[in-house]
Length: 125
Image 1 (cartoon, one colour):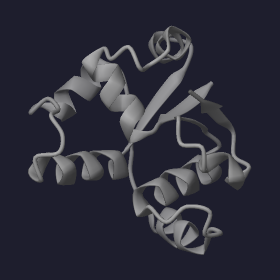
Image 2 (tube, rainbow, N blue to C red; image 1 turned 90 degrees about the horizontal axis):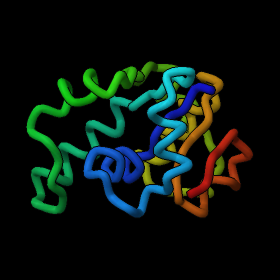
Image 3 (spheres, helix red, strand yellow; image 1 turned 180 degrees about the vertical axis):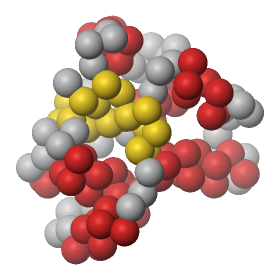
């Protein structure tokens, strides 16, 4: 399975937060699965960290490599597709993650109850 982690899922994973169910954690650490973190997620984390709303490792790039997560860049196709999505969700980061999930054939891992409206492959926490 090819998983794309929502921002809160990544944060919970890195913090070993009990909000992340063991079954999801097991999927993430299973080497049979490819786990992706979008550049959009890193961007969102950087913004929230700069505003003092979030604490994450200062060496996030190295941590992601250590976790064997693959970085998913934002392409022009992703950007244009996210802008054309139905307005089920207004958060630009979430819309980008939905677009990437659709275009890259991924399974999105989230707890956001608005995301299933897009009809994507999803694991809801």
